[in-house]
View 1 (cartoon, rainbow, N blue to C red):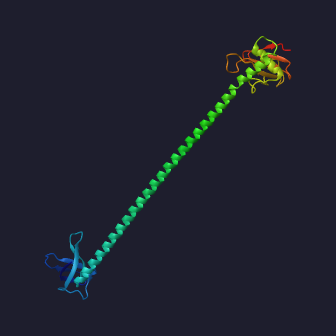
View 2 (view 1 turned 90 degrees about the vertical axis):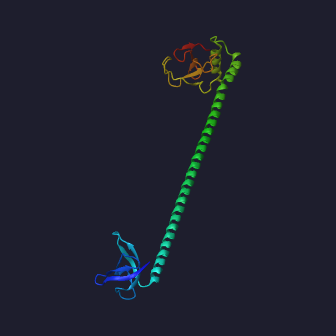
Length: 255
């Protein structure tokens, strides 16, 4: 706050100059900044605040005849500025808290997504493990079923060898013929007795279902081998033997 007296006043244009106490530079003032209880007169004692404009000229921002009103206004401005600063601090704090809360929510969602992905991976691994176990168990069952064909063949050989007549002189062929005549049991029940379609045309043409084929075991071979007996008619009236998997046939004389 400064003090001085009005040095010049132009009532028509509404501006003047203040001679400042203890200062050589006068201060310009406009009527819009004046808050005096009496009309403006040159030589009048005033109190004021001032600041420089963009042209570096001193201009009064408030002019009054009461020093206390300047102080009150300054104090009011300080309170207002302090309130604004407090509001700004509160807003900044709220923004910071909201930012931190948003980051916490993002981190929580990210952690939940990671847990969900991990749980999905564990579930997938468990499903694969169960599938592998079931496949292994099924494979073991099928292998065990396949292994059971040998005892059946051996049992059939024991039960029929004593009664089968020597037709060809080959024990496996004669045993297969005996099983055909007595209706089994056959070493390969899913294959023996099925329809032979004569696709190669090596046998006389007959209606579909006329021919049936049966496996002749081959010693030293774990699979069905290439030997088959093909019968014709129901019950069989003709018999053919192939030892090269249907490439050639020869008839068998069976009583």
